[in-house]
Image (cartoon, rainbow, N blue to C red; front, side, top):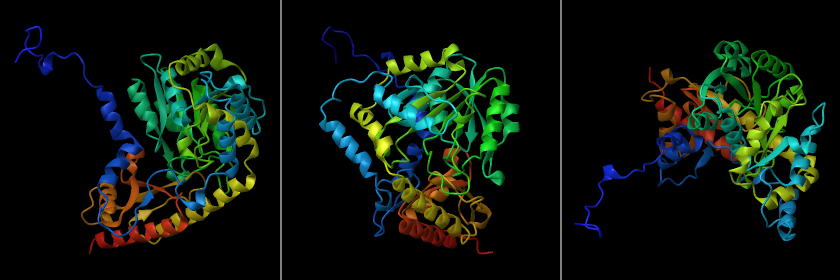
Length: 426
């Protein structure tokens, strides 16, 4: 066979293009990648509905309906016909101003709209700051373990070295600050905290956050504070934004509407520089954030246009109801774990939508590890739970409790039945 010009067709070896292997590996270390594998192992012919206790999207459940004020604001923004054009790459001015005012309520200083950058969800905010910090070839960033694997995936893609510090389950998942100092070096540029905690459901106390700030200042690094679950604390510890300590250490706050307003599909987030001393600007971080946003897609304009009304008009009783339901579900998780010998929840979740549960494989017959446990559970009981290895802790489980309370209770009954069948006879 010949081509039109008489030459032989090109062999596979002669083509000059190929896929990016970093992207192929990225799907293996994301929560969605792991959950997709578990979905494929569901028992397809079972009569019982699937109970999704592995992902952080409670929006399908009646108890977690989005705020009517938010829905009304979006409809009004669409119908205004004023938001059909392109946005500024850093965000619509009214949206930036609204976020600055919203976050300033909890701070000792006032944020400016210029401190706020609108993003397509918190994920793009994460991607922006990780990409910005990957400027130097030897730089490294410190990440919590367990944590949110998107930070690792993005760092790996940007060829930014990452190192892990542990969260301590025996101390309500506080940061091991001695470990932070031990693994940092002259090339460390930042550390990440997630408050309220994903995957642990912890809420950091004021004094612990202050120690984190002081440690970061000592090391000369900035703090990236992922606060996508802010205002969902329902235990004894009130939520404290890391920006409170912006005068001690520069803080980059990441957030979004997704979780607190139960609208993860809206993909509207923000990146905020809490830096009253101007350190981030003088070191080129702010200019680099702007540069990143100049080459990426902007968040949807009508959602940005609706944001001031959403932040201003959502009534407190909406959040009170959500937190009350989350507290009920957290109690179910904690109490039901006590009834199952092979799993232990070291501390009751007090915020976010997740709890970490430790597996005791010595009590189970034929279960090799947490991935095997979750795969067999999906096959036999149609319950999806995330294996802990996906968030950095092997032979643990991350359990999402932001589901309908009755469904959560049913899910734990199925987990208990599964474990009883698998218990070692001796």
